[in-house]
Length: 155
Image 1 (cartoon, rainbow, N blue to C red):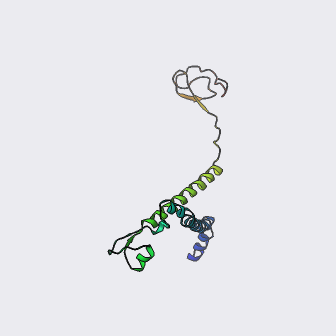
Image 2 (cartoon, rainbow, N blue to C red):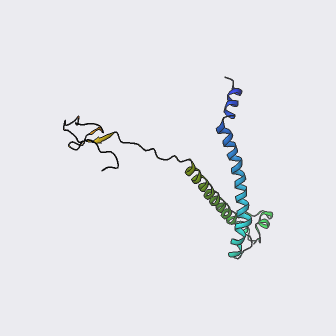
Image 3 (cartoon, rainbow, N blue to C red):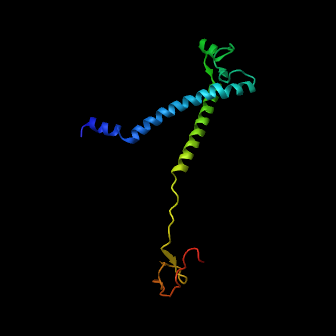
């Protein structure tokens, strides 16, 4: 089989197409969550902690100058430790992880099959406790007669 033909068979399988769709939808979902965190969630958090933009929290590692914003520090070429941007990324991750958990949890509930009801085929001999068939009248291990098995629910 030629390499091109094998690749074509691989590419048109359902799993590859499903994976491609999942990657595209996941990327779009990530952008929506990032926008939510940056534009909706973090501004009120910034106001609560007395600062206008949480993403501007940084620590300049080079020079003795104080920069008012991260943009000024970057324009000056200063090395910075951007812990505000890191906090935004952590919050992004937590929201995405929670949303994915809720989606997968719901999908598992919808696809979970009910447990199959099984009827036991064996029971224990009352004398020697060896496993014997439900319909047995005598134990094959100890040769003792055994009472008939009672149906489930009628004990």
